Length: 135
Image 1 (cartoon, rainbow, N blue to C red):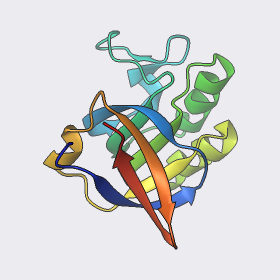
Image 2 (tube, one colour):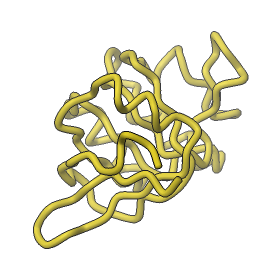
Image 3 (cartoon, rainbow, N blue to C red):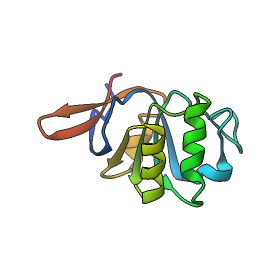
C-alpha cells in the first residue's frame, strides 16, 4: 500500500473520476503545450492526458485554453478528470465546456508524485471528497 492512501479534494465540477493518474508537478498552458489531436504534450509526445486522471499544479496562459480542452473532448483525447492545486476561471470554463470533472487538491506535495501511474479514484465519504490510491 502506498504512503498516499487518500488526499482531500474539493469538487469544482463533480463527476466520475477513476483511472490511471498522470501527475505533472508544473503549470500547463493548454494552448501551445497540449496537442488536441493526440492528447499529448508537444514537448514530450510520450506523455498523454488522454484517458488519464490528470493531476497538476494548475493552468496558465491563454484564453484559448478552454477551447483546447473542448478540442481534446471532440478528438476523444481528454482526461477522465482533472485535479489541480490552483483552479482559475479559464480552467473551470474549459472543464464545463468539455464536461470534464474538476477537483481542487488541498496541497500538491511530494506525496502526490507517488500516485503517478497508479490507479486512483475520487471517493465521497460523508460530505468530504478524497483522492484514493487503489494500488
